[in-house]
Image (cartoon, rainbow, N blue to C red; front, side):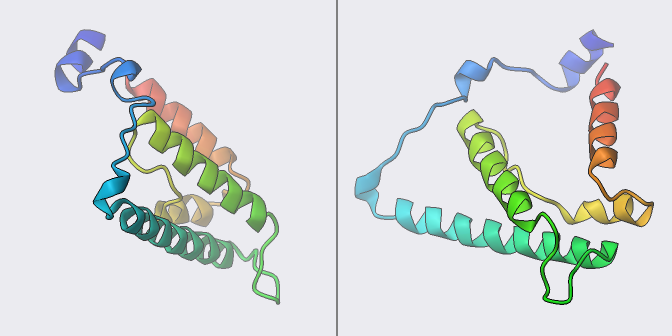
Length: 122
């Protein structure tokens, strides 16, 4: 199976992408690009987290939910760490809704699904 998988997707060394940053500060557009990505990612994360908290019935009367600060911190850390490794954006996704609808509330469902996806590679 691994030989077949290698034909479908090429696995490169992390040394080609991890930590390979080149900032051109003189161009003037880097600040605009960073601000734009920050703005889009922040709104995307807020919309997803609050929609899923409401869907799961976890919103408090004041509009907050337990662990919101931790959830935003984890999202910001993984987005930054993923960027340093050269991966596509790591963020929260609205696709969490089916797991919540089926009863998942603690994140254990996400971990199990992630492990099952990993096992499917082999």
